[in-house]
Image 1 (tube, rainbow, N blue to C red):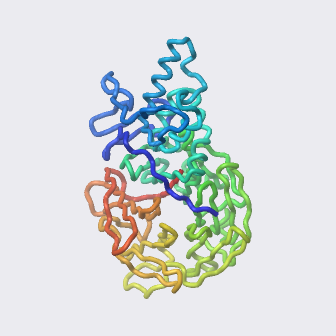
Image 2 (image 1 turned 135 degrees about the vertical axis):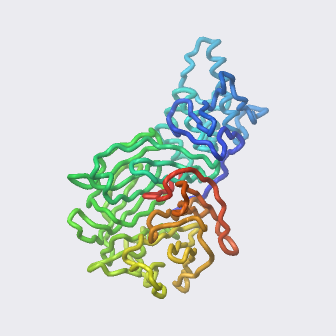
Image 3 (image 1 turned 180 degrees about the vertical axis):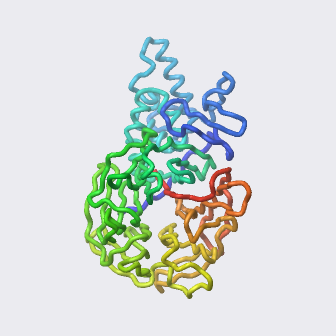
Length: 444
């Protein structure tokens, strides 16, 4: 399978700054941006129009420079609608940017940041349809244009998103559920343009689905074999879930594949070993399940590799970063800790060792873990719980905060792996509970 290859995205229009927040991130009306001083519309400030025009092509013809800013697009469409108004044409026409044609219009749009799609969708019916249908994201994927946003929950039923490029915080609509779901174990997964949150209510397992296209939560989806405490990972429009526990507490070896475009679940061959509280990643086009606990609460240090082409599982010894080292004095039993904190960047596997606050890298040839440096100093956890360690494009992201601070604080730390030990940059910081319940990265 092809790997995502991020492509350059236009960044010359910046209505948002590092400390700004949006209370309605992706509604398809005029987007709102909130900063510490208040709120403002992207298009107007105190009743006056923003100067959003940054670059407009000098020549309009069959071949158009696709390095066109969102400001240029807004200007072109504004002129287009103005001309339509003078000729008596409906301003909500079906055209995109008439002067450059539909193909060049779409070529420009797929290279705009998806943070701007809310404003673009408000221009006319065609733009709105293109964004809300999901077709624009499919075209981005085919063109290799991928932006990664981090979604996380530090308050029960509340989720936020963070754009690591613009350093922009966004609030998602609140989830609504009964108390049994609130306090149940939950897993999360981002796939395609969806964020899935798995939990359990009074009667059965339940899945909440957040759609980036509509900015809404829905329920009603169900797996073939409902489960919790599983390992999962996504690759573009597909995701695989493996292991976990069923409603009766039985540990599972089964696995399922979910396609976010068809919204269908498909059973896969079962793993060689049943396991729960495991972690999973995609690497080199294959799916890996790592660590967890098996029958009789036995700690599993092996991993399993699933080949999507021939549908087979292969066991890999000592692949888990948990339990493969020497026992730690006065430390909790490994089985009481969080599932392995692992992430893959550029097909290299990394792990966060919460006990020693170290970052480790997996040597594929030697099949050993090597310590390469330290985690951010302020990223505390409770035996690994409450700390998020994720891959976000070409960087590793650590989300957490200090437990000893008098003020609840959450930080987003970033490091782009390369030569030398990790050097962490703080991309964002805000007042919030420092315990991360769930976290997922959406690339689209």
